Length: 242
Image 1 (cartoon, rainbow, N blue to C red):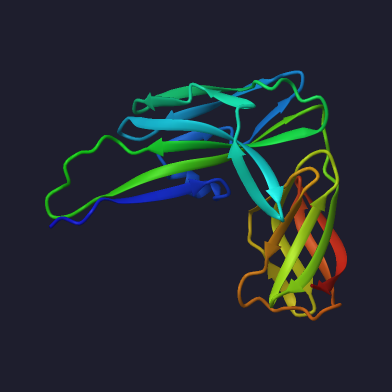
Image 2 (image 1 turned 135 degrees about the vertical axis):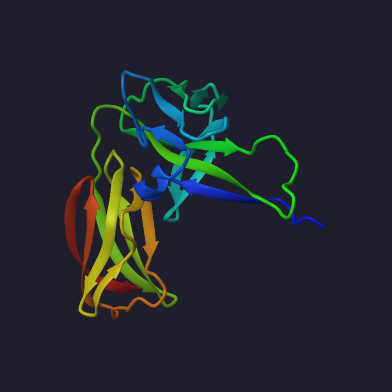
């Protein structure tokens, strides 16, 4: 009996550029930003592989609840066309339009999924199975009025044997967080190199320290260090307990 066909989903959103560069699909830009009065933008999809690519584009409303990202289907922003087949070596432009009208104040956040759909079923090769690799680009999209800025407040606390760093954004624009770490007397605690994620306006985002990281004692003085919008911030705080 031949082994079943295996499917691997590779999500590309916060993956370093060298990984993206190895895929057959190239997406530009990797962040969509639209400023009022404009209500539309576009992305370019390029097939650099040897076979046709069948792609699907979907848009989701993006929020943050209880410190975590949440997405939900939306019709406020539409992709046109929502699906296409791109021949080898060719590119395709997808238009993104906000049907709800221009943003009058602050910022609205969305996630854009570009999925490679599996090709039509074909006979299994003799002697074994094959792996059907599907790619997903998960891109942020922001529609805004003017140039809204974030305003972050950081805190760190221990709960249930875990160390958590939390950022609350009271500003009108999103904050892009990179290279988040906590400096303590026990040494630095890294929450991951590169992009750690975003803190949306009026929302809170949480990060949990990796397993095995040294846990500072309650009330210990620490410093939160992160890249925010291309500049380094440092905020002193004390470890709280919950």
